[in-house]
Length: 113
Image 1: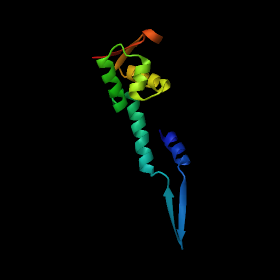
Image 2 (image 1 turned 60 degrees about the vertical axis):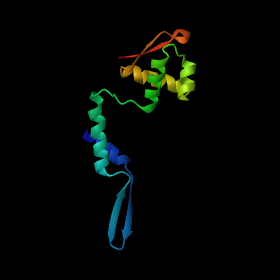
Image 3 (image 1 turned 60 degrees about the horizontal axis):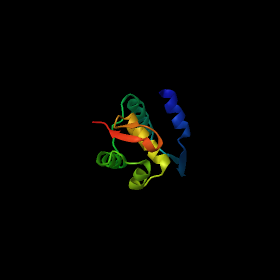
Image 4 (image 1 turned 120 degrees about the horizontal axis):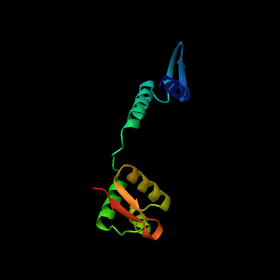
């Protein structure tokens, strides 16, 4: 963790303002913020993410109302492209929110209870 913090601090640009004999350093990001972000990132590696975004909630609602909904209909309802729908479905599948069965025309999305 120390090595990662040191590397991040190397990437943290600073600038100095010299006023007479005094010098003040300003960092892009405070050291405390970098340390906190690093601790949060490492701490969240062991926790499954259960945060449901508004887009995920909308997809869950669509699937609940119409279990036979197609990818094209979901794309239109959510206003996303196919690649985003694929990523969103994978995130929800990994989180245990939905189950995806079949491929192509026979693909079905099922909401996990």
